[in-house]
Image 1 (cartoon, rainbow, N blue to C red):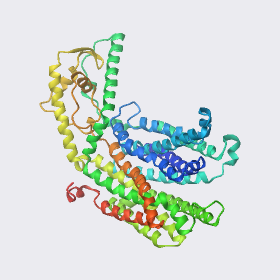
Image 2 (image 1 turned 60 degrees about the horizontal axis):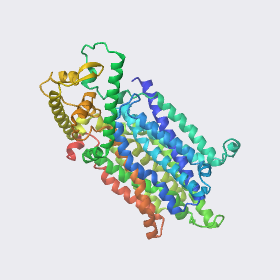
Image 3 (image 1 turned 120 degrees about the horizontal axis):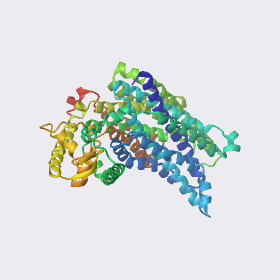
Image 4 (image 1 turned 135 degrees about the vertical axis):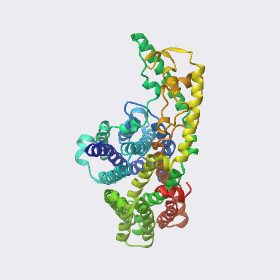
Length: 566
């Protein structure tokens, strides 16, 4: 791939990253007022906002595993990306029109309006956050070399930060001048979001997946070079129906066996991925504890406002001013993240991945402790802005490390790779034995010509005295011959399917989703017990210290494999 082509592909892929983050930042920012407006209590509002992350924890690994084993003319990643983007577009229509949809369906629209609103919010949060997983895998597929991969994820983090900036600003704009055309403020906002997002989705139509498609070799039955007699149209049609029926049956079997397969994959998580997951989970929990509750900390802790005070009172005015100042701090965090995303590649080349990653993790608890001890709004805002360094590093470096592990599997995933090769060799032996038993059975059509069901594959397998070593990528998709064999013989598949990078990226994304759920469950009780919102920042700093310990256990290079006995 030429330099110009690589840059255009990087821009096309990350345009969707930008669109997703704009929708999530603007949509989720505007959602709490809508919920309160229709009568949802605050304690239930936080539960509604947790629907997306909880569903993501369940489905992200499943979607990642399915994407690794998907086969289509559009590649492995884009079909999942497009389906999830369709969910985002649907949510952008449902949320502002919940009242109208409820009025069409019921005489008492208020309960149904709340249901439609919750459905739209959950769909936006779930589809929007889950869509990042196949998007990250697509980036890793297109840019497999370590340097190119790091540059790709630097651009990815840049687009996320830029999308966050735009997303936070859009709800603050008064869209009254569009009211005659698009309706109320929320209708104007969500229509604009839908147009922006639709343009970003259309850009993915021009993305190639040559790297993703190139690492799945065709099975021997697909490369048969034996003479082919002429076939009539009815023979071709009949053979096509037979193969399609087998593919449908195999797809149904794959769906039914997805959970057991996923369990097998989880039981065999490589240690390098496990160490990276734990470190990222602790780091994200520290950062999300800060980000989720920072505006409340500023409004109550620094401005001494009261969120439950009546509108117009002095206490409520102070709180609202504090929330606006807290929002400014988060906006400046995005600006800082954009800056570090642009120079991250230079930092890593100059100081190394280990130094930059550890520095970003160490920096955060220091900033959190400053926010705990200082009563100056300026100092706290500057400290909040500087946490953008940690945010940028967590968006880039864990994914480049995961790509490094998969790029050099022989070094970082060698134990898992040997197990895959043993399973593949055993499966090949059992397949060869079954082919000998069924060699006399004929089918009218097999891979475009008449003859034995296993004619092409048996000839290729008999040419070598021992089964060949099978790469992990070739295990992802069985050949047509293997599918036919398992259907006829009923042979169960051995072990778990080959591990692709999308599953491991999904595991890392699960750390981000879990980091949103855990603080939401426990921070309210902690603040209620301590009677101080400073507990938010103390908890974030404490989690940051824990993250430092686990960050030192991450495998960054080949030398760490022996050091940690991985």
